[in-house]
Image (spheres, rainbow, N blue to C red):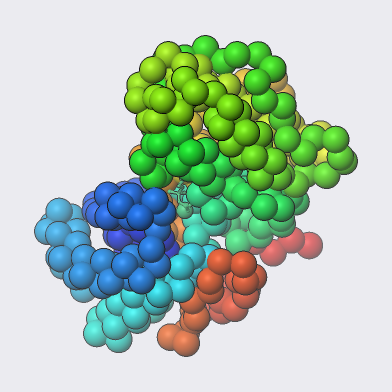
Length: 354
Ligand code: KG4
Ligand code: ZN
């Protein structure tokens, strides 16, 4: 079964083909440089860029794969959460293809796709505990199958990626700042005690990163050496980035460890989303999995940030179990729950528990 995946939820236009679970081809165009001019994603510009890029990328994808579009069995697209105008471009393109090629569609939960993308390289072992850390979301899930996700915790305000990006902006770094902070941090040494892990004195699995952002802003305001450096690669900036990155990674590790303590049935850990590309996050999660003797599935950095492979792979995982949508499948903006409105076309379901 060949699944075409279309990802347009934010500022990456990405398409991929997955054939029996393996990536056959993938293409992507990022709009990061355009939005960097405005210090963040401008939704209207993002949708227009998706509309401009999606057709040429589609042609390129099939050229790379060396197959004809008629060979595709199912068309998957990210239905949300994301920027509504951007999602609609991908959805309209997918539905047009479905009508033209006479193939079924499936709308994919972008957040689940991030986590399931770990299966492309590492395979998936269920039940799993999943940590999704991206630019807009920080979620902990219990995952029993590709369509059985139970949220256990989430951020109450900023996402982990947002903490990187917003503090990066204060430091004069271009948007998105996560990868740049990571590069600087790797060459710095964290000053101990600069930051405390935020929102730990509680008994829950939620996160709150806005206080950390305020602490960083106060520090930056009082430090002439950081202000003078504004985005320049100085030792002071490197050490500051190392401290920030360490505290974010440690906070994620502590709450994920707490979740694991409450869900000993988990047989594996999955860590995904843009922030899972971070070197400290990868190090602490590797340590956590080793401590508990659990398998860790973490996509390689290129599959952590938004990509078409994760949508195509998730579409393939679900479609092979018979799950599909009808053509009226809707797009869901950020903050609105995604309905469980797929229908099953086969009796060979493996996700039903007694
Ligand atoms: O998953 P993603 O590509 O898009 C969303 O769905 O949000 O995540 C983007 C986020 C941005 O906040 C970006 O700064 C962050 O991931 N990011 C990183 C790194 N690479 C990307 N954060 C920290 N370290 C990195 N290496
Ligand atoms: Zn994403």
